[in-house]
Structures are given as C-alpha cells and as structure tokens.
Image 1 (cartoon, rainbow, N blue to C red):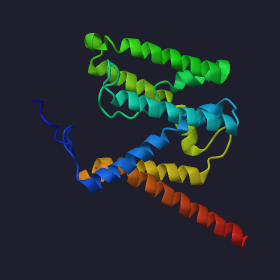
Image 2 (image 1 turned 180 degrees about the horizontal axis):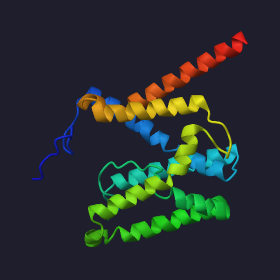
Image 3 (image 1 turned 45 degrees about the horizontal axis):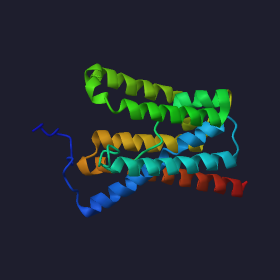
Image 4 (image 1 turned 90 degrees about the vertical axis):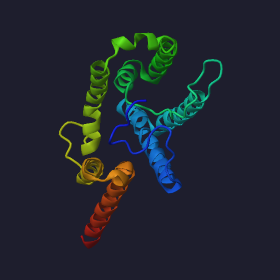
Length: 223
C-alpha cells in the first residue's frame, strides 16, 4: 500500500464528519460556479451581447451536468464510476479564444466538439502511453495552461479592459484580499483552515467589496 502523504487530511476512502462535509460541498459549489467566468470572458472579449453570454453560460452548465452524470456512470465502458464534476476549465481557453476571434462562437463550438471526440478516442489507449507523460511533462503542460491565462487574469484582477484605462481600486482590493487570504491560509493555516481556504477567501473578498462600496456611497452622499 502506498504511504499516505503527511499533509493529506482526508484520504480517498475517508469520510469526513458531516459538518466538514457540508462546508466542503458548499465550497466546491462556489468553486465550480466561479469557473463560469471563463465563458463570460470569452463572449465579452469578442464583443458578444448579454443574450449571447446568457446562452453560452446556460449551455456550459448543461454540458457540465451531462458530463458529470456520464463520468459517474459505469455502463458499457462509459464513465469511471466516480463523482468527477465537470468544470469549465482553462485547458482549452486560449484555443477557444483564438477560434472565437477567427470564426465566432460557431467555430469555437465546432472546435470543442472535435476536441471532445478526439479525447474520447484517445482515452481508450492513454494507459499504454503513460511512459510518455512523466511528472516533468505533465507539470510543464499545467504550467503552460496557467501562463496562457495570465493576460486575461491580470486584466480582470485590475479591472483594466483597454490600454491606458486606470486601475479600478475596488476590484483590485477585492481580488487582492481574496487571493492573499487563500494563499495565507494554505501556507500558514492549520489543517482545518486549509480545508476551507477558498470559501474563507471568497467571503473576505466579498466583505472587502461591500465595505468599499459603502464607503464610496457615503462619500458621494457627503459630496
């Protein structure tokens, strides 16, 4: 049996207490919902209107739900039998953005369908190619995915959409507090706090946003 890592709080077969399990479920829902910002950013970047944003987000949620159900099944080679919630991840974001700029949403959807079909076929013999994907290679791929998100992430972090546009202080402070609280809890927090770092960070960011907006409203009222 493989040795359990020292920093792992719960193993695969462990069942956390119900209070912890409930909070972790809520945190996971918020984390999954936060990924819906990616289709919003994609449609906004190509000049889409609010109706297109609604349609893309709705279709994304439906696709994630159907994918999660299929993944949780184990029927005639379909699914893994595990609950692996499908998310709108960043893996294809750069390629989707390029396709959307080139041919609009229809080309982006076609690319997504084609990529999904290739993955379905590739999944049948990926276990035979594990020797081609050591930790160094997979780590580099994950790093490259993160790098492709830096321009968009930095733009939204500072709430700057155009060159020369001033930084929006409220947005910057909200994002900074959220990030620093999450990182701080993961680095210096105990085991229990690390479990809920995302939920606590989001709550801290929302509180900061509320305070800044209240202060700005009072300033406008005095003026």
